[in-house]
Amino acid sequence: MRKSAFIIVFLIVQTFLLFFSEDGYSQQFYFPHAFFNDTSSLNKALPQLARQVSDIYYPPDKIIKEADKGDFYDSAFRYEMVAGNYKRSIALIDSSRKYSEDGFGQQNIEFESYAYAKDKSKTDNSPFNGLYAEGLKHLYDNLSFNKKLSMDYIFDTAYIKDVSRDFYNITNELKNKNSDSISFKDAQGIVNAYNSYNVYRTVMPLAMPFVAKQPVNVMHPLIKNKWTGVLPVKSVDEIPNPSLKYNLLMEITSGIKNKKDSNDINNMNGAFAEIGRLLNLHIAAGIPKKNIHVVAVVHAAALYYLLNNTTYKKKYGIDNPNMPILKELQDAGVKIIACGQAMHFFSVEKEDMIPGVKISLTAQTVLSSYQLQNYVYYDLGEH
Image: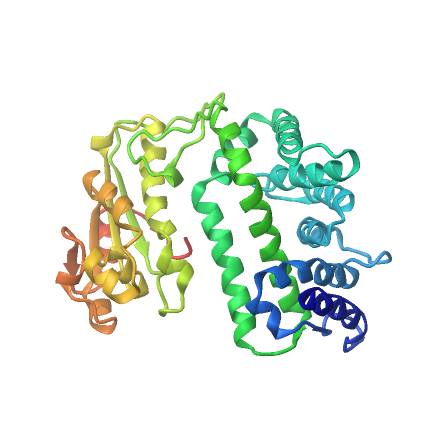
């Protein structure tokens, strides 16, 4: 009873205790710090916060530049969904599709199905699960061939861990601020993170069996890691010469900056998956494996990804999530070279790393010498 009264007081105060600015984006919302210690109260308070965010972000008279509409609507539908305005959220999802430049992963049918099921279950008292399955199938059946293939990547068991971690991280950051107010930017962040967390934890168990039944024709001719797949392409008329030697040189620099960098610590480095995908792409294009030679030079903070499990666990508290893909790459003949200069500056010893890693005096001579041997250079620093 006391908790319910506290929530009611919060909702009333939330309406009035705002610090107005000319553009609205500098507002501070009253948001008691105590919510971050009580999951139930936090979940009840977030819809009201979402309404406040949406009122500022998307007022009725707002004029949006044509180039900004895709991203704008993509954020707007998330705020409306958390606020419980499901019909408006569906309309905004449709708008985001029309203006999005990124067709892959931007269909948001998992969110639209959720909004449809939530709205319809309130009006005709039908079970949410059945409505969600109905909505998802209808939307899925209307996707193009390539967009259907992308669904296998969206509905992945690892994704719910990612969105859960993102929501935990932002709530923990706000909790550590120890304040009873929250900025507009922070409010956007927590509402956005909560939307993904809340939707995916609800729909993943419902969607994954459905997606698993669909024919997914992603090819993995050599490296089997999920993120190294090759999509089939119809009517290919540009064919590489399979008799040439394909010498590929990869540079990897992006890595773990500090022990608070939980996203990079807990997840596989995308650069290694990209190496595997490049291998798969060449083989799928008809180039025999014997004609493909790959060298990967690793330096800067990316060196930490090469740590063996014992060292990685001692340093970060978990097994190295890169071990499976690194083993696959080494088994496929990829030569992995660590920069000796970076090893010195980042305090990494050879015995700390996985077996089979070569040591160079410097990454710079690896880059120059292999390019002089006609290796094609790929910068994987941003993966």
